Image (cartoon, rainbow, N blue to C red; front, side, top):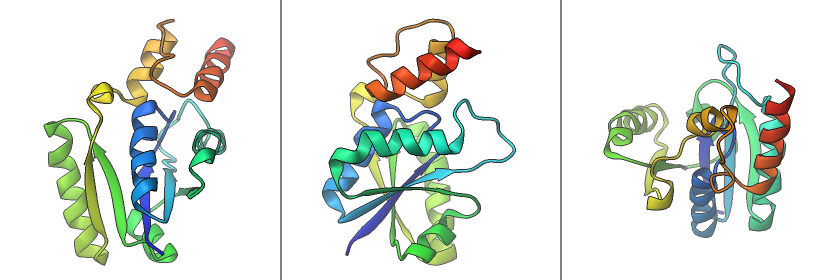
Length: 159
């Protein structure tokens, strides 16, 4: 079985993330979405909320498993016999950082990283940008899946 992982914080998952996951799900038998736990960073959504949203918006793919992780991504990969990491690249500036990470991960464990160019429609898109625009009342309906939009609006209405 060919396995890959798409890692990230996904706070929240965007249409750009979903595009990369969808494309990976067509190339691999099983795709793990690894939701990073960063205890030093307060996210808008709790990790369990992110997992539930990702599971909901990827349910139609049929081969996506969503789990959280903390620590080294290569350890997550080793524990699940995952030989490949799939990362989306939005711009050349992403490549510099991601290449260093890919080389480190490969040096630590032999895990390969595959870079997928982001759909140009989403080349500017990030979770941080979505949150900022939404917090100021901007329309992000075209940037996130409907369940995420609903959750985002509910979360921001409470704050």
